[in-house]
Length: 222
Image 1 (cartoon, rainbow, N blue to C red):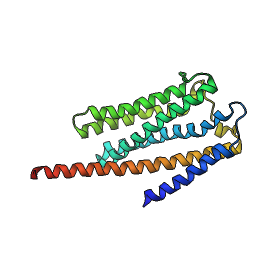
Image 2 (cartoon, one colour):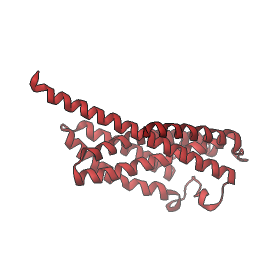
Image 3 (cartoon, one colour):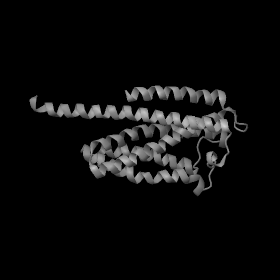
Image 4 (cartoon, one colour):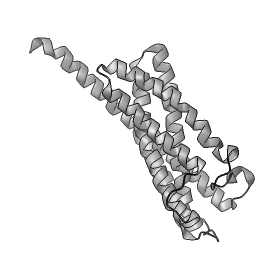
């Protein structure tokens, strides 16, 4: 029931966000129509960070309580996070070509985001290489905690180092009010989408665990 409600809310917000992006929001004078990818790129980057924050919290709670529910939360959020981090890098490259003249540059925030993507991959790799599932979950939780160091680096990259990325335009008043509204709605839309996908993935993972448990219980009778 909750997932159904969240689905309809997400659809309504998505329609609203797309309408604002492609119909209402003005075209930026310097970059032109290409600037509109900004309303997709920023939410993707936000969800990459949000997903790993959930991984970080879930990993701490798993190591502390050894409860499978926290490992499932971390794992599910990491699955969602690696997708949005990939999309953030792709949309960032599409935006960078007309803005900077290149598809990729080793700019601080871009580089730190690539490192985050690699940390996500490491999280899954240590799970797959472990011979025991519980040990893999433990190793992954350690990666989830240590890897969180990259999050403040991404957030503060434009402040700590001079890069091509613009500063915090939202807080500096550098956006037209309509652009700001569009960005906020877009952020809200993708955050809702993240919650929806995460809930779905947790539900599927719980079903996988239950099926595996039932198979193990039925083995003595075979």
